[in-house]
Image (tube, rainbow, N blue to C red):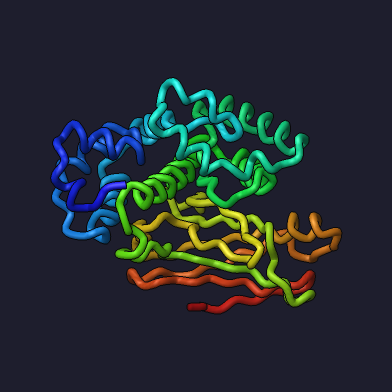
Length: 289
């Protein structure tokens, strides 16, 4: 780890080397190097997001994806990106805990994904089990090719932020890393969190609802990183879709609603929490905190 001051003072060559640990897009790295000095960790995180979303192109996103191993196959990138292999291995550590049948299904889904989209499955794997990642990839496989790139690029930046926190000493102590949008689901029929429920955030593109991010609720029924830190939605109307049908099927229940979609309006940079209270025959929502 290095301090923010040390990052600011590094030679251009050494700074490039450090930032490539976080993202291998040449455009992102070069513009980050040019943006020094960073006055604070908060400035760094905002600049990282601004460059990624405003200055990088689809080709830059695809270049960044090459800096990751296929899920469950860390060894494949040790030679090409040896300096990121250890971090990638730690991020995917829960894969090794999975049942062999889940591993095989995940490997097959990865092959299908790469064949369909032309790039490997990118997901912020930290804290996710192989079973959870399998549910996510199966959902994303339903996307159109021109839409999935935007979901993948959000996942890429989540990973970039995680790696910046590993690179910069005391990073998380000095900056708010919360997502602009968060959510949780509560199954009121049993009085417990609705865990392992797939949730998709959608925005309007070309006057159609398009996926922006796909997540799965944790043991507490929450998703805290629908969007990467530093990523702010522009004012407008968005939709959060909860896959309640699959949730109830997985819990051997019959539900009346195959999905619950909640539209909400973003007007500023404040935090938006979109919760769902659901039972097999009804649901409600409110703006949370």
